[in-house]
Length: 81
Image (spheres, one colour):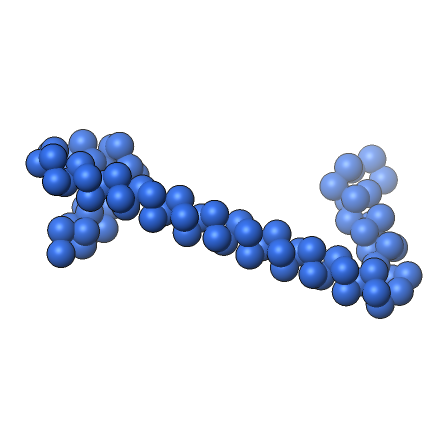
């Protein structure tokens, strides 16, 4: 078992098989981490869209906005409305 990822998975499996409370705590922690990552992703996208909207308000060329934000032309055009 020289693979670090495999060893970690096996250790986690062994730990979780010990009792239901450990399993419940593990699942709660995983849900929290997933929810936090989702929330941060949503906040990041909202920030990117706000920057794109500000760039539109400054009448910058759409190709510049695409390069700066990574948004598609369709996403940027939707912000105009």
